[in-house]
Amino acid sequence: MKRYLISLFVLCALPLPALALNIFACEPEWGSLATELGGDQVKVYVATNAHQDPHHVQARPGLINRVRRADMVACTGGELEIGWLPVLLEHGGNNKVRKEPGLFYADSQIQLLGKPTTLDRAAGDIHADGNPHAQLGPHRMLKVANAMSARLQQLDPEHSADYQQRLASFSQRWQAAIARWQQQAKPLQGMPVIVHHEEWIYLLNFLGMTRVGELEPKPGLPPTPSHLAELVNVVKDKHAQLIIYSAYNSPDASHWLASHTGACAVQLPFTVGGTDKAKDLFSLMDDSIQRLLDTREKCHA
Image (tube, rainbow, N blue to C red):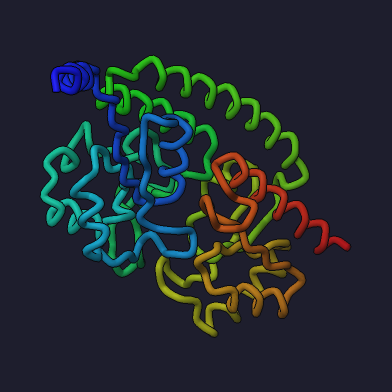
């Protein structure tokens, strides 16, 4: 009995292992970034997948329970999740993530493109602060990474050195990848393209491509026959070569327009998990650029 009590005393005296931070990521890209920067110090749950439109997500009980247990909620911001995230935060009842430092918005860390000069809901699904889909802008992603790492260190100062080391590794690999992507994508520079939705602005800006039309007559509204008919002339007049759509867009409009013009439709992953090859942030960019190059070559054949 005495030996048992001594053993129990020794076990109780040992320091408890630090628990991983529970991170609730609204979209796959922020879950992937949190995993890159947090490693074993974080446990990441991703609320959506690449085949869901992040504008329209149901605030179901399972997500509320996840928010309730989270140490950090990492989302896009810029009103992208305005229809569902506030419900999760309210019903989750978790004061740690209702505001900073537990609440992290990626778009608050960068300058957004496409900020509207006037706000008019009749213009469709517009975002007052600018286009929120910045995950395909590699230079902006690096800024978000620095900000997220700082937030992780604030929430978990005990492992600050680990977060700093992982950030340094990510930054070095990411900057090297940027140089490689820019070299690889040179044949795409100046290419005019049609997009399904105005969510590709950061990728096109990075690659030097030009958007000359959208399949949606207004942001967030589905393509209409009359608008598609108008785009036939746009493709011909602007010499658009590619029609870009994401994993969660219906391919019908893109393929219809391709069948009536000389342009080729191409599905890009848009976020991590959008294709079999887009398994993380690096392969997301790799696969996006390769798909553009492969489709361009097919169109020129």
